[in-house]
Image 1 (spheres, rainbow, N blue to C red):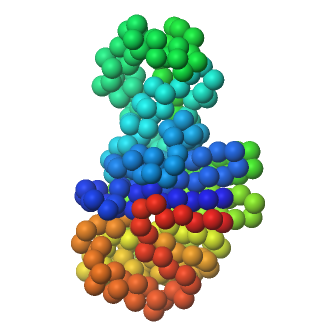
Image 2 (image 1 turned 90 degrees about the vertical axis):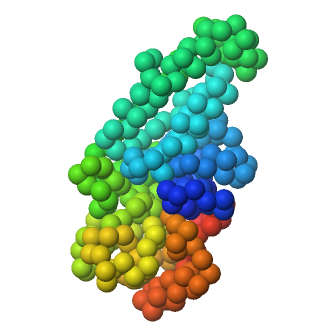
Length: 288
């Protein structure tokens, strides 16, 4: 299993960081977990094509976790011929509505798609890619996920739990990918809700992970704003309690992404968690 950090940034635009996205190459599949703004460009920089992607799992529907799915979905469809299997999208409640309102027959891109399925120039390009007219509309089917669970694939599986983040307005998931005795866990965005640290479901999801990518977008929020954003001690406690082998921090906003603050954050993590800690950067790769 190989994990590539495509986007390690926040909702704010940054030249050095795309928003949240993580690529997992596992078994016969190439899987994206989230695909925020700028991460499609990182996918290209990582040497992958849109048609390589077999599955997308969305953690939640904040725009910084899903906006570039529009670009990926459209380009993958437009670059496909008859023999390209559809990309499967999995996500929380509302994911089907999101896709339909962009790519449905009455969606925001319906004029674009109608021109590409009917205009002779587009039909000619479709033939050159091995397609046989009439050109079909994109397959907009989505698998919506509810509550904790597991989805099994050939040689790997992905588990999920709900994580505290902007409920009841959003449903938010953390994910764990398992294959060949190795595990990768992505917490998604996490709000502090319990004085004792991470909720039990998230601690269980992270248990014994070879690689944990954890949201870290705040510094010293624990003391000032209970219910606020996960800070370094929260992250460190989860990694320690779960027995994580490598902790990678991500979702860094510009307010935390400076040399001085980074040094303070890593030092604070080190007072609790003694394992390997990596300050996540776009295009970092991890082999498990």
